[in-house]
Image (cartoon, rainbow, N blue to C red; front, side, top):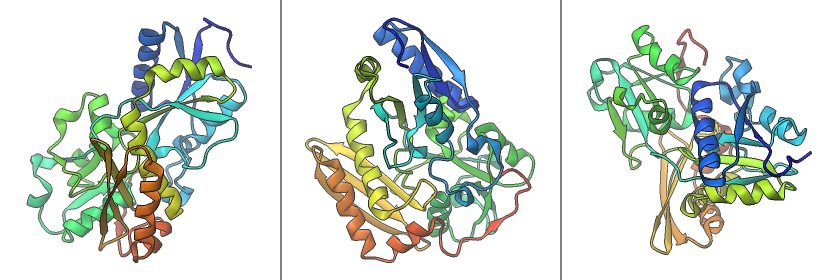
Amino acid sequence: MNPPAGAVLRLGTRRSPLALNQSRGVARAINRQCGRPVELVEITSAGDRTSAPLASLGGTGVFVSTLRSALVRGVIDLAVHSLKDLPTAPADGLTVAAIPARADVRDAVISRDRTPLAGLPAGARVGTGSPRRAAQLLDAFPRLQIVQIRGNVQTRIDTIAAGRVDAVILAAAGLGRLDLLSQATQLLDPSLMVPAPGQAALAVECRSDDEAVVSMLSALEDPDTRAAVTAERALLTALEAGCSAPVGALAERYGADLVLRVAAGGPPVVRHVASGSVAAPADLGRAAADHLLNTSAGLTAREGGPAGTHYASSGVGS
């Protein structure tokens, strides 16, 4: 059942500090731009109930399925997702009604003694739960060791003080939203570490037949971000890869053109840059995927993990 006009909107969110921060930001924007009151409904997702590596859970959709079920059942009226966690296949009866302007797309390094990656000694342990980050890191710095970690942002940072790792790689956007960006040792240029498709962007999803909410959420839409993530996610779809695959993709607008930078597979990582019309972002993503599928990167991307990567035990939730 859709909410009556003017009723308090129930916004579903995961319980993690980052998810709550993101959802509160969207709630404030709805209240400010649309004049509608919003209450948060905290929901524990399937991905929050396990410490298993995301790749072993299938990766794609593990954090969104419970929220989507609540939407379909009418328990909530809208949900906020990290777009990089959202499956590329549409969900029956649901629509991504708004994609707000994305935050900083870069990955950030936090290290002991604020040592940058280039200064870490051979065998230094870098924590990440992302096959994409692992592949690109080992491609650029093969002397380093990857330690698989999971948990919320602060839990990952705490693995440094606990002595389990010498550094961690996290999304700059998440650190910024939690006021933790000052802890970053360095921000990695996308030419070195291509971010995940949809990284730093949010997706606001609601029921397709709730025309009033769909119309209202259009006030939060950023067309340039929508075009960019459409290209990035079209690439994933064509590669038949999920959010746990070692695929980085970043599209940026330059006038009437959209430039898509891709890094896939690895190590060695295959890199590719393609451009197309900002009016046809999905075509650009598919064209880039066609190029990758004619290389070894296409196969590696589908496998969901960087070839030859060694994951050492960290003693924490992965």
